[in-house]
Image 1: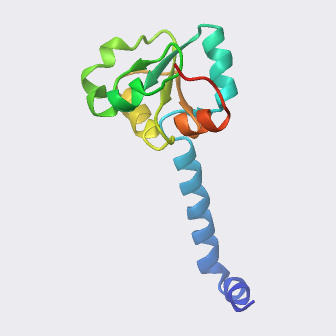
Image 2 (image 1 turned 180 degrees about the vertical axis):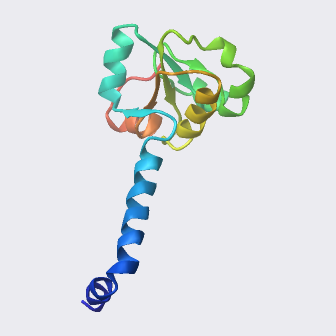
Length: 133
């Protein structure tokens, strides 16, 4: 209760803090591309309108990956962007969804426009009991 009273009494401090937090959350949520669900990925993959890039290391990729995805580990991405077509939507996949935004930012700098990120990564894919090859 004291915190609420403090925030109300000192609104000139509270308001800029609230605005900053909202802007930070907004910027972080859009970093690297639009987040999509596993179901959206399945639809795009079935329509063959997307190119799936798995950013995990080769060993993780070999242990199970989404059908049709190619493996370009994040550490090699800047050297292998020529393997990714620019005329399709690019879906970035990592283990938990935390590496893909950084990869998306890198690809944006290389001129890629249609970047999508699998929300929750392969971990969310597994939770939804979707198949891995």
